[in-house]
Length: 554
Image (cartoon, one colour):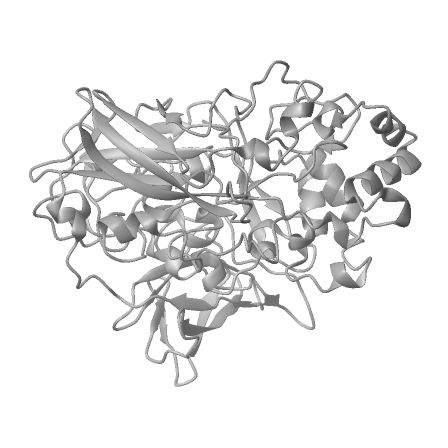
């Protein structure tokens, strides 16, 4: 298989097929009860970790079709040494010695997938699987093109406010990334020079129609900020800039609203990307979703007759009562504050004030015992949608969601979030790792967030270090294949389906792919800064233990 000339890689058929599995609730029973884990730092292959063989336990679970939910019989589950096959009900059991394992599920007509499991003596660990059928018989549309654009939003969802006249949690903010590829036979080039990549939002050209942010921007720390200009200077249309790794293009802090110009509420608005050469000739266009929502649902709990119907005024009044502040009276006199003035917020790079809890900790800690405060909040599923968007937005919609995972499976419940941050986890800078469940072959780069990680374990060496993980798999919460039809515009345009980018023919003229990832090696590379990886327990409800990286993101 040929790689890229210059920035080299070749796409292929299983591109983190483990994301098609996303299984296992992480339950672990020993005696009458116990809290177990299907996550942990593991080596690829069979048993790893301490290497202990003292005692024995078992791994059990069920295998289903991710699309239909039907049970799959005859699927092989293997740790590299021991194997088991699912019965007619899709169930299996592997007897194992105590230790950490990377498991693979293989079934006829389905993609092979990987997950990790930690077995302790006398315990039973549950690892469930949702498998994706094999695919790839269609003609690849990109085969008739000269250029391909792989584009994505960084987070899968950004949060916004309908009203900034009381306080500010976050400003209007959305970030888009793109990699431009010149297709070829012997090789293909990732292009970052001699071209421009512009973006525009045909249905969202005037955010100021639907928000009062710019009336208060100076008080929130951005004086003289022009209307419809984001806090880093980006506008609602313009040219993207070459990113810091010189691998692609980026536009940060686009001041996007979920409202179209005509007032239609659409949290999955579409950006049009246009690639031109130095002569102004259009080389390629592509559409990509830029998700943003104002569905914060504060009104589930923060409503009162003396707030003029504003949940934000209710929040200020409660904050004053509990903390001795005067936010409500200041707001009445025209003075408003950003939460990050006092509460550190890594999303904005705000240091906050000494002795004051960071915003993420303060929010999760205060609300941890209030998820059932009202009937509205108690009925919210998942409970995270009481604050994060939301029952209509459905932020969690990617492959993980389709496989039956919830917010708690990666992040833990409210108490788990609190304990993790009290234990030192830095919100926004240290997040759950793909490799915790899918193994080292499908892990992020060392000390690097998923959204900034790059392929490092390709079956072709000259493909390494050139392609962002999100370029093929899309952003967190919206991993391909997404349940929302607004997400897969890129694979639909260039690959002819809604899956992750699996076909080598998307970028190569004469390639037939097998697998882009070398399952026998890790995607992690040393950061060279002496930083370490720790396991931070999240999931006070008996959820999984999730690995977070320590050290700065890069």
